[in-house]
Length: 424
Image (cartoon, rainbow, N blue to C red):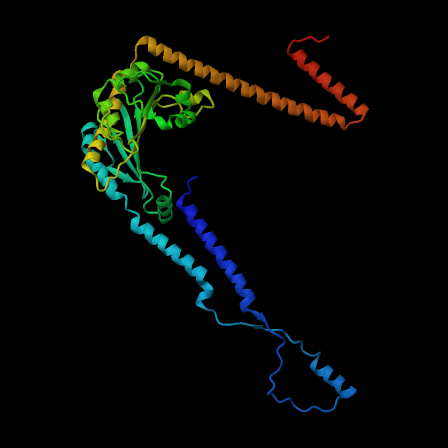
């Protein structure tokens, strides 16, 4: 389970606050001692009084009232710095946290610059417009940056989401140092033109993550099938899943795409070399269906055909020459996949009809499930109403129950009459 930085900081504040209260409670017991009844100082000379007589006592009582009650007083001591160690620790932790945040809030900007300096030429030569008038890459938060491009064949628009490690967050930096769970990543989401290709699903995912991904992806699990008969494809590192094998065959026959897939794991196009510890390419997902199982037919009809490509970024500062070349190759892969959808996405008639039939079967199945859910809900509602009536009848006397049953029979007879039914 991943904690956000604010959650961790609030947890730290809570722990330190509890410690402060515990320390204050212990000080109450040790530093404040209930004093005994404070006597008058011995060196004060009391005036001599006449011998007490009943008359004198009455007179004193009348004029001075009842004798004053002696009130206990608490003995205290001056506060010391050690009494506020928890509060001082909390304040220092807050100051350090805030200072670390502001000092490192721009720690990822050099990484963004290195990425765009390496890949910018590819984007500018393939898209008419990028970013906005103020910046090519837009800062969304200290760790999130957005890249936008439009004006190209086959594509409505492209968004690139750069998400870096939380280098501005002290608590998450410490956690990441002990338990490295995150990495710098780049996700492209591309909205394709509606009529550039037939409707199908196509995915290339890391082999070690395929089972996990397929469980969470309704579209891949419902329509896609793994393909193991594709030559030159890096099957030992990736799994290709699709319901359009004709398209898959065309894609993996492209030399630049195959070269990029092998480069993503650190090998040449022949599969030779030393593989990377972690592949740079996480997944390529092309789909016309919802990723999660839809709850209605409308969700299928409104689904937008999208292409999503996820990368694990290398160390960008300093960026080694080999990593820079691999980054360019994988950026060109995005362009080549887009072009492949436009060039090979229109399948033969037989394949196109097969895909349409598969989607009709899925829609009919979903429609039947919706109808069954409505029937189950209606049956449950009627059963609850019947149970309520039975409980109400059980509380009536026999005579009241008979009248109520006669009333319901007459009511049911009227309904049947309106429907044209004759009940003898």
